Length: 75
Image (cartoon, rainbow, N blue to C red; front, side, top):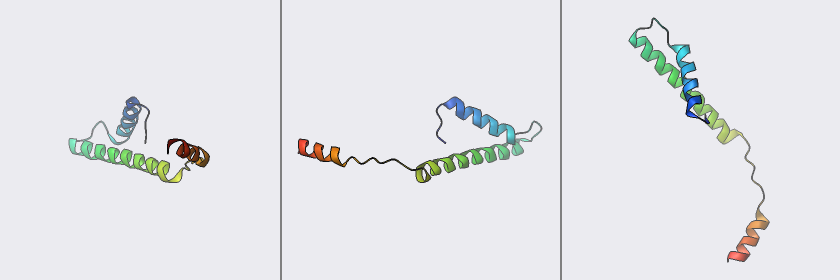
């Protein structure tokens, strides 16, 4: 995921940690749950990045005339 601010990242990490971290957890359970939350967060981030990179159409305007004129001027 591409975030606009680090505070948004912190908010989402806090949300994930609230899902996986419980008050009466042992340190081992805490570490396991926190690791699971980070894995899920990173996995979701990779999925969104993949979709943005490969599935969303990218506009590529035809700049042939501009490129042709620039080539005539600068060469």
